[in-house]
Image (cartoon, rainbow, N blue to C red; front, side):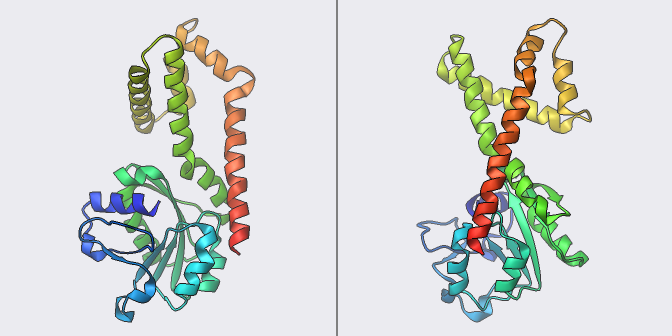
Length: 253
C-alpha cells in the first residue's frame, strides 16, 4: 500500500526529492526519491516531520525497535487494526492520524479514511492535504468503526476485482471469448462506477432505473435479489475482513 500511495503522490506532481522511503527489501525506487534501508541510516537532522507507517501490523514492534527515538510532528499510520493509543505509546508524535487508503490511490482514484483524536485544525488540514491527491478523503469520527471501513473500502478493491472476474467468467459461459468478456466486464464496471459517483440517486435506485419491468436486466436482478443472497454474501465477506483486522491488531499490541 505504501508503494501505491507513493505512485499516487508522484503522479499528482509532488516533488520526489521531498520523499524518503525506509525499506530494507526494496530493490528500486522512483527517480528522485531517497531510499534508505533503515532509519539509523538517516542523520538526525533528516528525521521526518511527517512519518507515514505503511508496514504490516505484525512488523510494528520490530520497526519501533529500530527507530524508538523518532518524534515526528505528524505520524500517519496505515496499519490495519492498530489503534491510535498503541501508536502513541510507542512514539511521542505531536499528532497521530490513522489512515486507511485503498489500492486505487495509485492512480488518484482511491479512498482514504482518516481518524484522529486531535482537535487541532492544522493537524486535520495537513492530513487532508496529504491524502487529497490520492482521491476521496473521509473522516471517521469513531475509531471503533475503522475495522468496518477497512473491510469496506480498504479491502473492497479485492472484492470488486473478484466480481469483475466472475462477471467475465459468466460471459464466457454464454459463449464469449475470454479476452473479450474480460474487456467488456472491466469497461462495464468502470463506466458504471463513474455513473454512480456522478449521480445524486443511490445505487439501488439506479439499478431499478436500468431494469425495465419484465426485461432482461430485471430478470437478472431477480436472481441477485432472491433471499438477499448478494447482500448476505457481502455482509459475511466484510465481517470476515473486519474480524481479521481485529486479530492483527491484537497481535501487534
